[in-house]
Image (cartoon, rainbow, N blue to C red; front, side, top):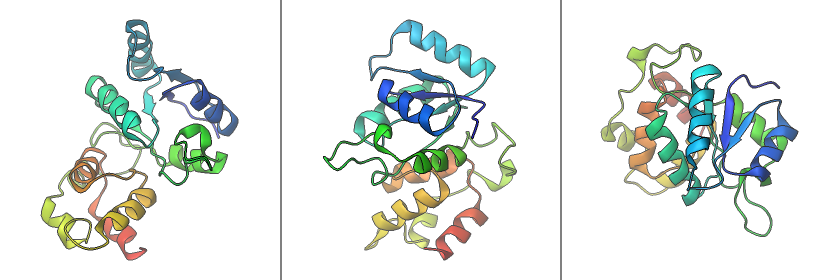
Length: 187
C-alpha cells in the first residue's frame, strides 16, 4: 500500500512502524516541542504532497495533533484506537500496532470538510451535526455512550474522543449523516 501524502508522526519508532506497514514518507515531530525547522518541513510537505496527521491515541498525541491542526487545518487525519496501539506492558503508541491496524487507519484518513473531494462527500452533507444528534444516536448522555463512540469512531476512522470532541471531529472531517446512520446500524 502506497500513501501519497507525507505522514506526520511523533517519533522514530512510529516512522519504523509506518515504513514496515506501508510505503510512505514521514516527518517526526519529536514530541510536543516541535522545532522551527520541523515546522518548515511540515509546511513544505503540506504544500507539495499534503499531510496526514497520525499521532498516538493518548493525551500527548492529542495535544500534538491539536497543535498541528491549528497550523494545518486542511490536513488529513488518521486515528488508531487505543486497543490497537497498546502493547502488553501498557505502552500506547503507533509503534505497537499491527501492520493491518496501521493500514486500516491510513485507508480511513479524512481531510477537513470541504478540503477534498476524494471521499465523494458533498460539502452540504457534512458538518451539520449537533449535540441533539449525539443524544439521539446514543453517543452522549446515556449509559454506554462512551463505548458506542469508541466503536463508531473505529468504524468511521475518526478515533475515540469525549462527546464534545467527537462531535467536532464529525463536523470537521466531513462525515455524512448517511455514513453515521449506516455505521450505527452495524453497532
